[in-house]
Image: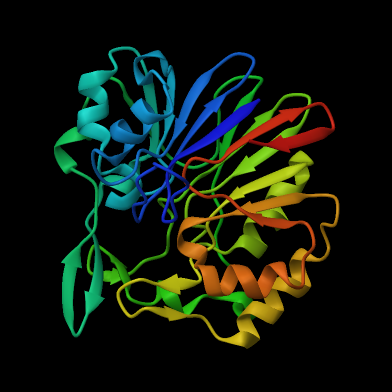
Length: 273
């Protein structure tokens, strides 16, 4: 399995950084895009990495925010074969409140009925290699207040539109987008699949207010994730560098995945290019 970050907040070398996420994943049976980022950054960085997006056969949109699905229309024009899996509620109205004003942050609703988009309602098994699951946050001690300015249909967002991907090969990789429902709760449900690696953001930083969650929340998350010493965590995007640095100092099995980084998983081993 080979995973390359094509869109991420931090860039390596000639790669263009952008607030958002897109992971190119090659497995034994699939070529996958997990999220597509907000704009043409995906296509620019794919060209820099000599990755042909027309070969992608499966797209997972993690949730209904533009920084993860904004490039979807352009992708569907470039790629004529991929099936796109997204929760049905991801196409509802999503917004972020700044100074009392709600700013739209959702997906293009006109894509909802596209013939290659499969609308899901909860957990789904795609095939023997791929499955998707949703989570409702229950751990109040690790709740990120960076979520509190986000809304769905005018109400506080419940993040029922968020889904996580499990890839089962020689290793089992859990992939999440923003982890709005909480990395602790995602791992609590996801551990049933026996993940060896976990990749994605934890939404511990609010980019509008440029604020990281409090130390009490970070301590609670570090304490809970310490229960998974055999899982290699690669975080990115909305975790934020400050939160990452704090967590990584307490969790030796946590690393940062920047745009342009490539992870290669073979059996029980792992490597990074």
